[in-house]
Image (cartoon, rainbow, N blue to C red; front, side, top):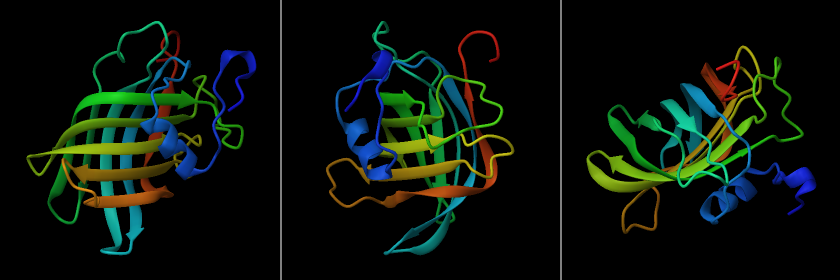
Length: 178
């Protein structure tokens, strides 16, 4: 992995981003990402299903012991299943060269993270990647994998970045334009 000018550069593939989330590194970019909407996840077990989400998530930098608060994420699907984030454990906020949001409001466009929470009230973990492809949100994507504690098979496996069908993700810088 190259580190020009002290910034971590990730491969653009969703698999590489998910692997980075599971590592112990934090990205160096500051900011937060907000938004939500819906996308269609085509996992083999359930076919093409609509997934809705909403969030406010803060990047972690090297000089912080943990990400700034609040960090909220909710995922809903299958007509009643839901995941609620309780702890954001990893975050990578990066500026991917193949994503050029207009206007660029933050030093990053991709938020890859992991955390713990509850799925239908039971302990679960999540890995996710959200991108901000600019306004009005038609180039934004979501990738989400939710697994019950102790399980090996995800309850939701949207492991391919899917474009939003409704909604918008917005990357924000910490100072100035919030």
